[in-house]
Each structure stands twice: as structure tokens, then as C-alpha cells.
Image 1 (spheres, one colour):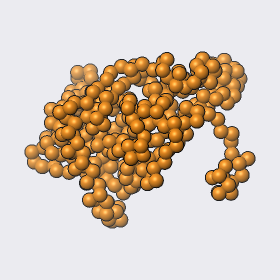
Image 2: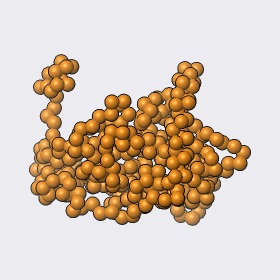
Image 3: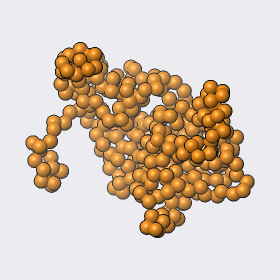
Image 4: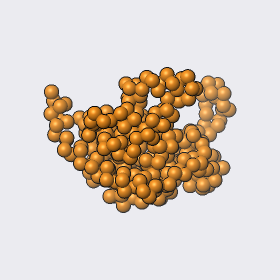
Length: 316
């Protein structure tokens, strides 16, 4: 109401707002005909993609969070209290648990970076994978594993589409830093994966500045299926990384909201506790954590050093 008043917007012009598990209506005859569902079936409010993924991975109480590596990358944490970053580096929204909030940091070019590298430089892996009947990303994972932590002193900034967290900068661009004649494809592959993980760590660092505690981190999305990427997350976040038994996080999330809305469960946290099961757990490697930390601290210095040059390049 305060925002509407300041913007001089009549509240009557806006649609009614519902909580995510709240019943908003029932299925019409026409919708029933098109979907094959029964007319009169209750319809609940639902949630957006990441808010639904949170419920589908059990992120419904304080201390819980998830990281997803899809085309973009997201670090998402539940909060029972509203917390807004004064620098605007992360998003704060109402979440799918009534009365609660979530904060979300975004890496624009997460899985996109690896896909770009695959499309430009990995034709051999594609052909080999086709002959073996495996995914080319599996072979790329194995290739990257042959390079040591730090990719033989090679860093990558994943800003192929500009960036959102922590640098809200549409002019930022991707960078390989430290490239030399000694580097092989496997080093560049690992540098890309590590660079994405460094950027996701940037998101988590903003949460920590905001006093948002993360004790339980889930991994999902295409990148979450990579054992190497999950280990990088565990080592750089310095906390265990878990996956869920269900691979359809957002779809499961809205199904859970429907069950809560129709009375099958009393609350969203109760439903998550009963339904969500963990699959794999990846613990931090005590020897790897400090090695990654050294590279991460160097990574953090590169964007500030290039910020003005990004603007100059965009102006050409």
C-alpha cells in the first residue's frame, strides 16, 4: 500500500494477490477439456521458476539454500525475515512459503559458458560421445578433471552476457586471465567451470554480508548433475552439497504447493520434510579448500581492474 500510494497507483486497478499454496479458483470446463483433468479441480497460486525449485528441493526454512547451474546460475536462500541488500546486488522477493522471503543472486553466463565452449571447441568430444552413447558433457567433465585446481594458473570470468551479481554491469564481458602457450583444452575447460563457481561464490558472499545463514546447500540444474562441478561448489562454499532424489525440482515444488493448498499437508515446510529426499552428498575437501580460496581471492580483483575498460569497449 505504501508503494502504491507513493506512485499514485489505484489499488483497484491491480489483480488480487494470493499466497503460493492458496486456492485461487477451480478448473473450468474448457480447461478441463484441453487438459484431460476434471472440471472443478482446485487451482492454487503456484510460484515462479526458482521459487518453485526451492520448494522442490526442500528450501523452505532458515538455513536452507540451493544452487542451480542452468543457462544462468542461481544461489537462492530462504529467509523468515525480510533482508534487502542496500547495494542492490541480489534480489529479495516474497517466497512460496506464506509470510517468508527469499534472496537470490544470479550469474548470467553459468551453464551458458560451458555450452559456448562446447559449441566452439568440442567437436571431437561431441563425435566421441555420440559413438560411445554418452553425453558430451560427461566427456568434458572427465577432460577437465585432468587439469589441477586453478587450471594451471588460468582464471575465467563468465560474463558472456554481462553480469547481475555482484556486479550489475551489462558491459562486462568474459575473460581468460593468465592464458599461455602451456595451456591445453582441458585447462580452459576447467577454468570455465571454476570461473562459474567463483561467480556463484560471489553470490553467497553477498548473503553472508546480509547475515543470511546458509547451513544446508542443495544443487540442481544441469550443472548439478556434474560430480566435478558439485565438488567445486563444496570446496568453494566450504559446505556439503546435496542433491535430491527427484530431478524435477520446480514441477515437484508446485505439486507440493497444490497438496498444501488442498489440505493434504498443513504447511509447506511440513510437506517438504515428508516428501523431499536427498540423494548424493559431496563434502568439502580439506586440502582443496585453501587452494581454491587463493584463486578465488585473485579472481575477485580482476573485474574491478577491468570495469572502466569494459565501458570503453562498449562505447567503441
